[in-house]
Length: 150
Image (cartoon, rainbow, N blue to C red; front, side, top):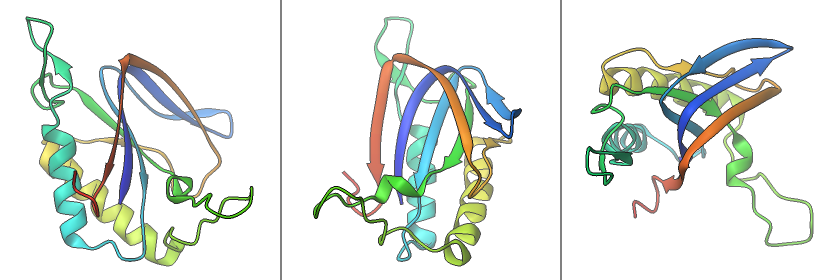
């Protein structure tokens, strides 16, 4: 699983002209799923997201997690995060899991992330044409890959 994590002061997902989900202070997480992703990837990435210390403490140091600040999470599927641009100018998405594999993993990830955060998260809609609006706070943007674990 590959995630782009953005600390936001607000974010929303609009589908067909209607806002589906929105959050205030928290994390906008764009997530891509590979066919090789399994339960340990879900567990590791979910734990990493809720404990990632990228919110400022009273001294202005990034020392708090989304849990610590009672922040929200907006999770959006985005298969293009696994694009390969090695050959030519047209990206290849061969590493991205097909929907019949990705959707159950995505749904399991939502369940795990909700449990780890301790409250409901907001989501986009898998496979939909979505418009994402956000105010990146900082800006803080981090890429996390469950295969690299760095």
